[in-house]
Image 1 (tube, one colour):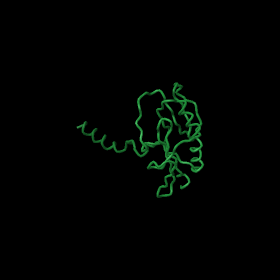
Image 2 (cartoon, rainbow, N blue to C red; image 1 turned 90 degrees about the horizontal axis):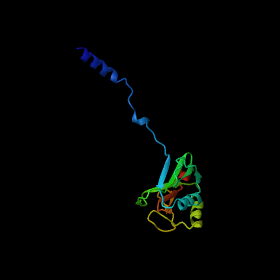
Image 3 (cartoon, rainbow, N blue to C red; image 1 turned 45 degrees about the vertical axis):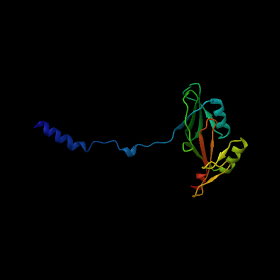
Image 4 (cartoon, rainbow, N blue to C red; image 1 turned 120 degrees about the horizontal axis):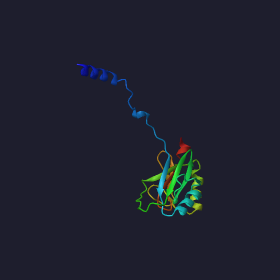
Length: 153
């Protein structure tokens, strides 16, 4: 009888125990890591074309370089992995800029080919909601989108 009583008491109080509420689990973007073949060539691309600042690689592992997007968001370039990466345009890094038209001129200055979503060279994609987009690739073939979404918000 004592076991049944204890079981009933346990069931009664089980409803008062705090459960992990999945809605309290949140995430924020931290970093993007890209596997690259030539660390110096890729680092120069992200420094010059995207004007990213290089930051301290806290892992101190050779063959890895870190860059800042600001607000604690980072890009990590990793050249110590030898496996091939399969890429397509649907897998891309998307950035937004209030200086969209000026950035297109930067790409032209560095002879970086860009296109709209279908792939028409040197063409800006115009979405039906008025957002401008361009797509281009880094030295390792990773796709990057730049758009003007921040101007539309």
